[in-house]
Amino acid sequence: MERNETYSLEVCAYTSHLAALCQDNILKSIDRAKMKGYYDQWIDGKYLLGCALFVDLYSPVVIVSKLMQKDDLDIPAALSGLLNSVKELDKLKSKPLTQWPVFAATLDKCTIVGESFSYQYQELKRFSVAIIVIELLCVQGKVVLV
Image 1 (spheres, rainbow, N blue to C red):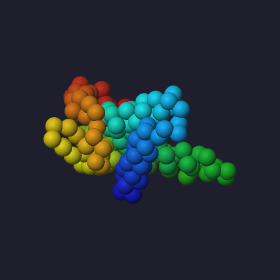
Image 2 (image 1 turned 90 degrees about the vertical axis):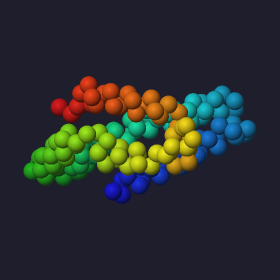
Image 3 (image 1 turned 45 degrees about the vertical axis):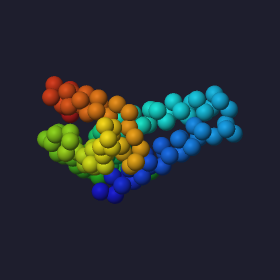
């Protein structure tokens, strides 16, 4: 569960920093415009949920990647890590997307404020559209691990 907390703290810090940079008159206007574009991307509901989805997907694979990058490559350990990664991916495959650890934690931290959605006090754009798109993908079987 530690990775869930780390993920959410990084998103909050990053969006806060980008929001400050968007209004910083020390930066050139073209740089402020770039920061505004990055900020808009990070507060988009699709981006937030997509990041959560990929953290869940790639977490099991990280184990194999780390084992394969060691100087003293241990083939049996790497194969064992690969099998464990496949088992973890199979566990994800058997659950609906809303029960994947980081994705579910991200959804839990999203709150409704008036008619809009918020993540750690940051209003999210198009979050309801992102939820509908993800639900449609799940229903149509597009979010499937093979």
